[in-house]
Image: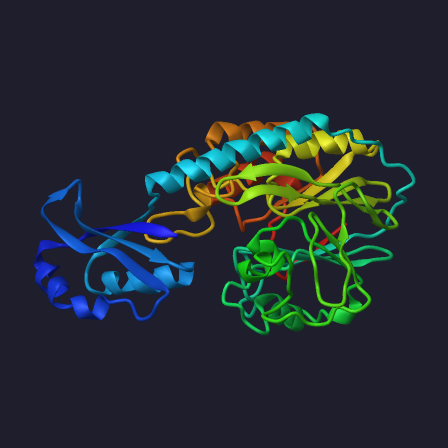
Amino acid sequence: MKFIAFLEIPSDKISTYLQGWRERLPDDDKVKVIIPPHIMPEPYKGVDGYIVFEADSTAAMIAYLSKFEKSGAKVRLSYSWEEPDLVKEYSEFLTHKKQAEEEWAATKIERIRGLGTTSRLEILPLVDWHKSREDLSVETGVSYLIKTDENCILFDLGLNSMNADPSPLLQNMEKLGIHLEDVDTIVISHPHGDHVGGGKWLRDKTFSLTGRQIPLTGKEVYTPMPMTYPRLTPIHSKNPTKIGKGVTTTGTIARAIFSMGLTPEQALAVNVEGKGIVLVIGCGHQTLPRILKSFEDMFEEPLYGIVGGLHYPVEGGPVEYFGTAPHRFGGTGKPPWEQITKEELQASIDSLKQKSPKLVALSPHDSSPMSLEAFRKVFGAAHRELRVGDPIII
């Protein structure tokens, strides 16, 4: 990815900044400088200089720009697209968007009958951005452990951005007393790095719980697209697929994501006895209106609750790097120069409010603090904070 970093340097620190240029050279080939650091003759709108560079990871970008901040510069980050690349990406985005709309228009959703119920549902966040205990790890990814009367399901596998072994997911499982042998099913919501265990695995259309692919013998795996795993045959659950008593996948809804292609995403639906359906969602790229429309067509039971990510990085995101919140520009179903608005957020909240859910727990891994507060305010007593290590029990 190519970046532009704008530099603001106090006049009394420019000499020190210029003298320390050797200390700011990239340490390795993870950062490639396209246009060297440049100081302008006069500041323009608070900007004293800039640098254009490529970085192969967020960690490499942060490490490189931290050198500039240590030398006295204030850094503001922006993404950079060369015109031919931008034209190509936008053209592909429009093609995928048209394809997604055509698929949705042609979708015929049948009523699910004979699903059964579970008397108990527990959703334990194992990976997300907020946590209930200091000893647990967080990251901007998702993994939830879902327990019903008959099943123990691992829903998504987190991000593991450093390709660690053990991963944050496995570390948290150990601290929470969760044993992998107790898990009978794995469900992947959609093929993005923060849900399949890292971008490294996504490139090969596979997934992993940690920095290496450990044995998963005897486990059923349901994926939103054809995927592979050593000595396993994952089930491509494009259509709603029953997993166990009271539990089904919802089938996939595809959406065009700029620079990420056509993304199919599925959710998990659990029918809780005497209460109704609880939807567990990864990122919500399907869009909340389409998730709710599918729910209406699929079930006679009421919507009891919704738990997980809906991707509302309105006026910010879960993280900021040098003044930029990456989630605002990616994964929104829009080109990066258009962002999700407060009006769109409110419209989605209003559509969910009409269902009168008794449980709403929005994941902080892909939404802004402002969006989290908006959900918290509207749903009141029905709202639950979603934090690693804090179980939601129904």
